[in-house]
Image (cartoon, rainbow, N blue to C red; front, side):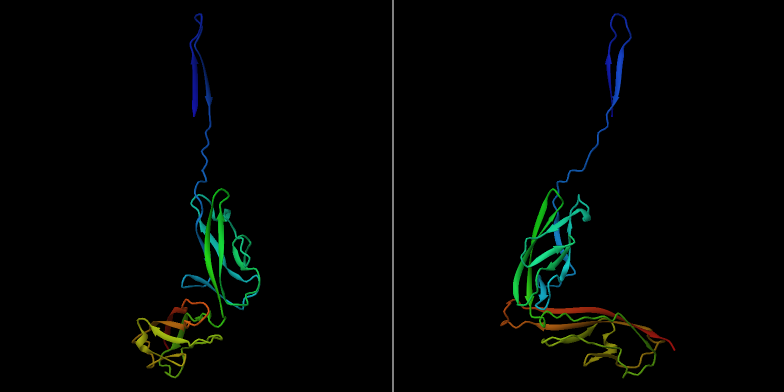
Length: 235
């Protein structure tokens, strides 16, 4: 802005004036603390972070993020004083030592923007490795030739070691066109491109729940769903 000062002349002299330009810079006041700390890519079951008891030291649990309306994401810092967990590269939550026994642990994460900070405590269940098993569904697209035999499997479901009973099911718009038996998905009838060129369904794998007699009392039920697009190729 510009400021002008005037003074009347004396003894018949001319009036005097002076002008000065002043620049005012307004800076953002960092008055909002971070909020909403998240552990991305961690396995959450019933509100707990679930870890198997076969994880070694420096195992990556997940990456940390937080929300701060007046601070860039890359300017936030994350810290913890936990004896069991550590933060590496500012945002990687990792184990400090091998996890060998089942237990319920807690870790408090502090997010700071350099002026203000925010704490959030997460509960972490360390469970038997066979209990925390999460079924993996990797198939996303399956293509078959029309008039294929119904004996040809569209996909076979495989899973790793677990002492829980595994349950499989299919749902979705076109589920009635398919069979699911002994972990194999197949057509009920040979597909015909001219009558129906594409199908879609959802596959779900579930590993049951913990009995109440387990050391960690909360029931655990894990499942994964994945849409499967089955595309038929014309002869």
